[in-house]
Amino acid sequence: MSEETINLDQGWFVIQTYSGYENKVKEDLLERAETYDMTDKILRIEIPVEHSRVRGTDGKIKDVEENLFPGYVLVEMNMTDAAWFVVRNTPNVTGFVGSHGNRSKPTPLFEEEIQDILRGMGADGAEPRTIDFDIFVGKKVRIMDGAFAGFEAPITDVAGDHVKVMVDMFGRETPVELTVQQIEEVE
Image (cartoon, rainbow, N blue to C red; front, side, top):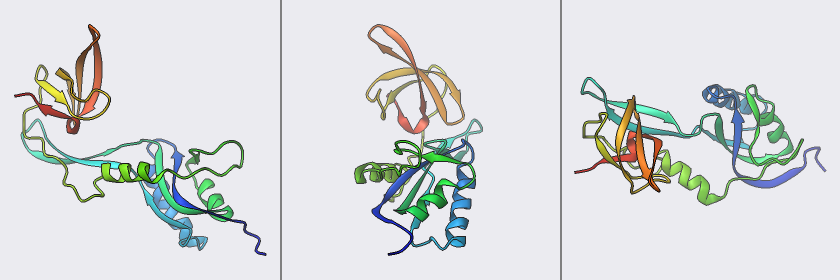
């Protein structure tokens, strides 16, 4: 019997990193997979990002990349003791999400969860939506995505590709921060 106990859990796992170090963790993991001969166990590494096109204040359309889950990286892997050790001990990795206690192995994401995330990243081949209307304070927009989908509200602040709106809920104004990809113009 080999020294390594094989756990047949193959799937996508979420690792937690220091925020802002996601790209460095991805680079380091790829390098460590090569160094420790784990390319057959550590299969794929993704940083969940969303690509969008926004019209800047100068009127030009630019491509913007936004990290969907700051501080997290997705790893598709065969969860063996050695692979778990290599990933867990990568610099700037603080742990696995779904791990219950010291030295316990995590559970993989459900297939539906990872497919939703990959689709959100544009992995389904869909082109990012181009925003073709002016975004300014006071403009009334409809929220298309998230918990407030369907609500209409005025923009109260614009910062890059993020906007703040005031949603009237139960007679109370509630501030909501959104990306421009989550809104559409109210005609």
